[in-house]
Image (cartoon, rainbow, N blue to C red; front, top):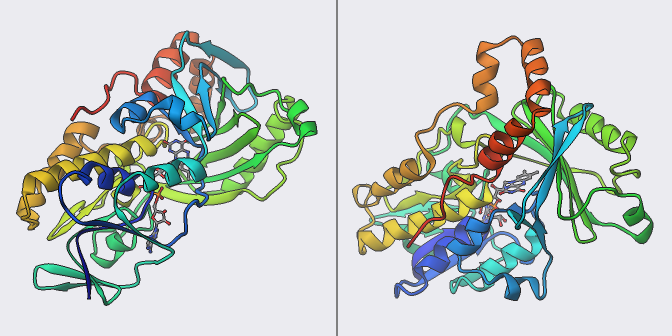
Length: 374
Ligand SMILES: Cc1cc2nc3c(=O)[nH]c(=O)nc-3n(C[C@H](O)[C@H](O)[C@H](O)COP(=O)(O)OP(=O)(O)OC[C@H]3O[C@@H](n4cnc5c(N)ncnc54)[C@H](O)[C@@H]3O)c2cc1C
């Protein structure tokens, strides 16, 4: 029987941030991930500066060998409508490639890495957990993303979950494609669906292009994606076909949260707990912050991993992300007929103050929320 103090299932941003925070605690921490890193992850790869501060990432050191695209503006609008540009004097976000970013975070986490091994079983034995029949730990942290097996195996996953569904492709443009792409690297483009239930993005990171669309309902997602790609082509933003099939993924927004993040000897973090921002669908920052908050809880518990000892984690999540409520589009959608929403949405999205102050600053940049402090 192999043993560790804390076993983290999943080496994405949530799991590796939690391990990184625990690195000086003297605890023996292991991360188990079913994939070998570096691995691809379906994601836009857009992070806010708070993340760099919270994880003490030196931008110069990171950028020296990896894609790191500063963002100083946005082009936004409704699909099929006019777009407006919003600019900033300094970088307000960065574009990374998840293949590189996740590998970087995992390698520097300081944890023992068990890569290419999926969690196949998790059983309780006294006050310990036995994973895959031979790996023993008193505390298990589920960081396996939306389909985290820990959430499933322990029954924390809700029975009816309203997910956001998205499709995305990321590829390196060849020289001809580069001339046929009018999206500026420092100014990603975001276009909202007319019912405001989702948006598409086209985001250039150096010579890599990331294009995709996510929606709060999964109904006719492929049609919405096809319509968005036609729109990009007809407006000359990207005058060529995406060379590979778009990959799909689904995950929970915090507003629709139904998962219990705390159990006996158990915590859930990141997408496993359903923490992505309800307005934008961004989940990297909540994944990292929940990993850090989980680590804070574990350190304060001082070797006691009962449900009661770990319960403060639930309060830290509510303090940080607010009480779970409904997302903005769902809230609007409950009270207004769809043709009103469409008309209102187009009107608002063509208004400069609404775009800058509400859509970008509040919904996407979360500029009013300072970084977590230690
Ligand atoms: C199309 C799309 C675009 C997005 N764009 C953005 C964006 O631009 N910015 C942003 O902030 N967020 C974005 N998100 C959300 C973001 O990708 C997630 O919220 C974030 O990856 C959550 O991190 P995590 O560590 O919780 O989970 P993940 O990143 O999903 O990591 C989970 C890890 O667990 C491992 N795992 C899974 N099952 C097992 C198992 N059985 N055994 C062992 N290991 C397992 C996986 O291999 C994986 O490495 C996007 C999501 C989608 C779908």
